[in-house]
Amino acid sequence: PHPVPAAAPSPRRSSPEHGAEAGGGVPGRPRTKFSAAQLQELERSFREQRYIGASEKRRLAAALNLSQSQIKTWFQNRRMKFKRQTQDAR
Image (tube, rainbow, N blue to C red; front, side, top):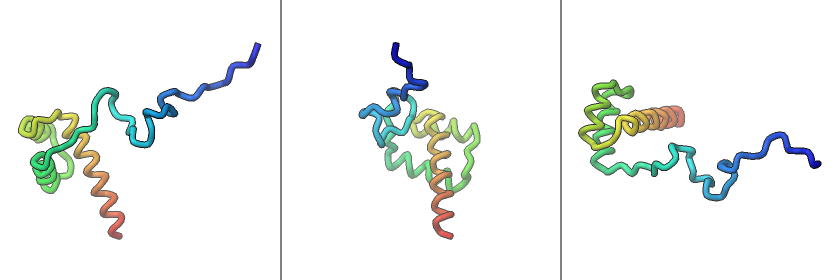
């Protein structure tokens, strides 16, 4: 019998439909395209406070018709963008 390879590569990692654009997000959920009005309100809230509290997250989610997870993720991503921008400025 032929030897079995120690570890076969994961088919998800190397399959063509999961190329450079696939961010490894939640399966089955398309990327959220925020409207200009949503972004304006998210940015305004971010300028006031970089870390969002639970009550403000609930308020924004209801006001912008987004999930609290989407709000939380947007703030995480925005803080990383802010961090990159401030490091680049040095």
